[in-house]
Image 1 (cartoon, rainbow, N blue to C red):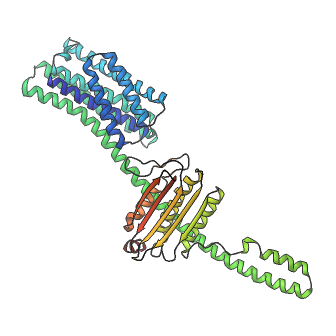
Image 2 (cartoon, one colour):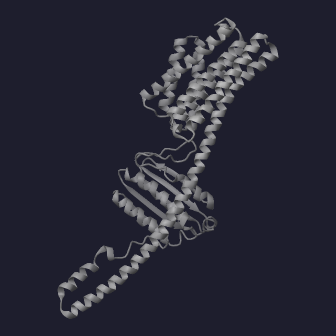
Image 3 (cartoon, rainbow, N blue to C red):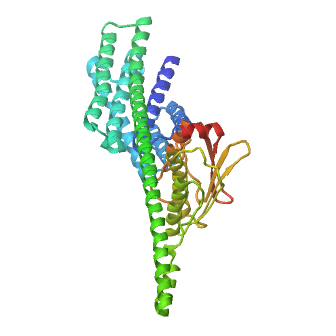
Length: 438
């Protein structure tokens, strides 16, 4: 009886891992909350199984998976129940088919109830078939369906549980044919059970490797984008300098024409030229700081915020960003302001405050505070999530982390619910700024 309970405990653990992988393929990673949720949920299902009622088990299975989808993955109620119903149907079908196969071989449908040599392979084949169903559906319906080599990868992943089912059936058939008992029976059962968990671990490892590759690609794309932005700001600075020279020359020409008009006694020409000199386009551009690249970044986001009705207040102290190269300035300030502007634009207060100060010990502290009505979300690794809809945080976070990692800086973020403000604070030591410059 103890051995049977252990087998069923392992089976429910496998079911939890399979359901977890199914939801992760469809809805993304939630490792922090998922581990506790699936442990509690499937622990409760294991306890309910002792009642020995198939209808109760099926209802509990639907409720458990529906709650997991709705609470952990934040799916609508109807969608959660739909996925839970699919998992329940797949579970029931995957249990009936291996039972029919085993009964056809040994001539006893209920042999699993009193024979451990039958229980283990039948349970493992059932879970492998269940795993195969959820893997195929999750791969076809999930966001990974558009990945390169999709059909080939799907067929390869599905071939592993199919071959494992064949191996499990072969071991089971030999065990029954030669009546394995004692140590031989235990080793055969352990081998078959191991096949099940190896299949699940293969999928987990594959998805982890794929996640690492995607993250590396994102970092490379982010670095290329930051370098392109830095080059853009250099070109913009050149254009801005040429424009200032042109405006200066135009003012000199207008003053000369104005003087000639006064000598000729033509007051209308003099008045017209005076009005031209008052135009804002001929005035000096806004200067936020003494660093050219940062000044252009701030000018760009000032216009961006003005178009969206967001108030941007900047206080950049002299020398606070000295030692940071153009790419570092673009990555840090550009991404910090991009996130802040997107969040503030969807808030009620619509405010951003940026401060960059130089401390006595040579440290630079960059603070960006923006209004944000809703608390930001974090992914399984504790990183601010990128969300496509609404004014929210997340874009460029990896770029900020990459830049700070390259120069030994650090940052922290926190949200004040009472004030509805989000804070991002970057700290760069004097040594870190030297690293950025190199």
